[in-house]
Image 1 (cartoon, rainbow, N blue to C red):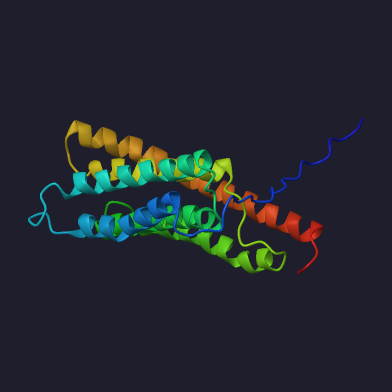
Image 2 (image 1 turned 30 degrees about the vertical axis):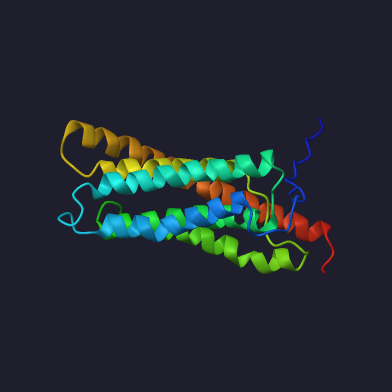
Length: 209
């Protein structure tokens, strides 16, 4: 009886079309980053200042999600994939996730332990950055599972926010939102484990630079 060798997850070498910073896709990414403090401000405003604040906050997230898709689409379509763009994309995703959870925790809509779970995963990934740099890499390509986790979390939290009420529609939004949040948190950590595995595979195969 023969055993099947373990499958190794190899990180493909990232490819770039340009080293320019100020491209249309990158400007969209910068605009998406600017939406992070805007979202936090709107969520934490007193209701009397902006009665429809939660709806506005959800619209900010929807616009951020659209620009996330659009900058990637334009970068591929116009051959403007850049080093800066590939670094900005995961940074913006993580900032949005952490900012959303902090804002919702301050509103008592999510528990603080959820912030700890998500932030701890990002701290683990931050700790492997020096190992990547020792092999000439600045980051790893974004994995499909990581993108799926980000999508699930960014889809979940607006529903949790809209579930802040007592009506049937509020309860439905809250239930669906929390189901997506827990699923997304699991995928978030699964992707993190894959990134760590890729890093150690890379260290075994690549010489120190």
